[in-house]
Picture (cartoon, rainbow, N blue to C red):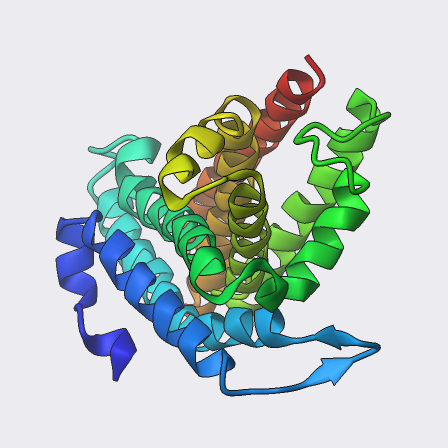
Length: 262
């Protein structure tokens, strides 16, 4: 029911509604996960269940978005490219981006409500990556280290989106939950969240943009195959679009890695 409170048509027309919709879905998922008491190796799994309860309703919704945009792209191709590639995929990218940043905000806010210990599995990952120092830029990491790590997430986003359509949603939600929890960890109060978020924008904007474009590229190809475009001349154009989006996305994570070590 929750995934239907705002229609796909409304969100495409007004992408900012995605922020509100995602916050509601995320909040309900976290509330539900508070009622589940499961631990493994002395680590509670509330944070993981919160992620899964977000992924379940949003995967279908975002898959529908990808298929819808692929249908529109087919029409544009038939009209001999009256729109540029950004215009064709703008809504899709903006909705994915809004989805991600809304989740970051949601996890940061709820960390103050339920306590940071609630997201213990996210804190474990933060400690592994940051080394427990609290530094946003990983100590001792080189450009190559960061780029390899980011490339892995980039490739995973592409492959999951390609194989499952909306499969990259898990990667997006998981990374948003970690970033949101980390921002809350650095913040002294809820009002400090915006200021702490800004410190991640220089490199984070490029890296997250790259992951989202990887998801869009994988989704474009997946939707085209589902619609049997591989049997028509349209598929060549769709594949070219996906390749351009993929390369732009990879360029963004390279730039992000460069900025992160400055």
